[in-house]
View 1 (cartoon, rainbow, N blue to C red):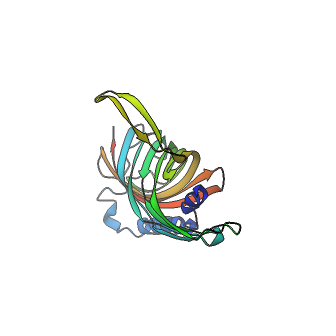
View 2: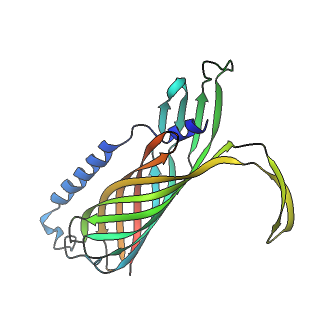
View 3: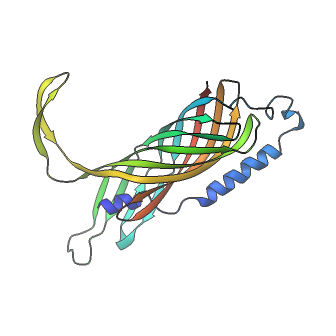
Length: 241
C-alpha cells in the first residue's frame, strides 16, 4: 500500500503549465502601458545586497489516478503554506532556503494481486508533506517588476497514516503532565530527496515590501518508484531588510 500512496503523488501534471505560465508572464510585462515606468514599476529594484523573507499560501491540484493493477486513487486539492528566505547578491541572483507544508486527504480503491483471493478494498486517509531545502532564484530584469525562475534541491519528509506495525504501548515522562502511559501506532513514512523548478512574477512594491505569484513543479525521489512530481501554485508576501 505504501507504493500506492507514493504513486498518488505522481502522475502527469505539468511541464506545460509552467511553460505556459512563464510565457504569459513575459507577455504581460511586454504589454504594460507606456506610463508603467512613470509609476515606477519598471524602475530600478530595491533588492540588491539585501536579505529577504517570504510567507504565503500554496495550492496543490486535485488528482484522479488510475494506477497499476486497476487500483484507483483520488488526492483532494489542498491548501498549504510556504516560507522562504534568501540573500540578493545583485538585482538578478538570490540564494536561500525554503520550507513548505501540506496535508491532503486521499481516497483509494486497492485491487488484490492475481494470487490474492481478497476483494478490492477502499481506503481513506491523509498524506503529510514537509519539504525543506536550498533554493536559487534568477530575476530576469533589474526592475521592481520582473519575471523570475527558481530551482531547488530539498528533502521531503512524508508522513502517512498507514500502519507500519501493531500498536506499541509505553510510558514517557512528559514535561507538562509528568509520567504518562498510552498506546502509539507506528506509521509508514520517510525523508526522500526532492527537487523542483518554478517561475512567476515578482513586484518590489516598496523598499521593504514585495509580492510574488508563481507556479512550482516538485519531484520527490521515492526509493521504490523513482521520481514522482506534483504541481503547486503559490502567492508570497515578503519583506526586505
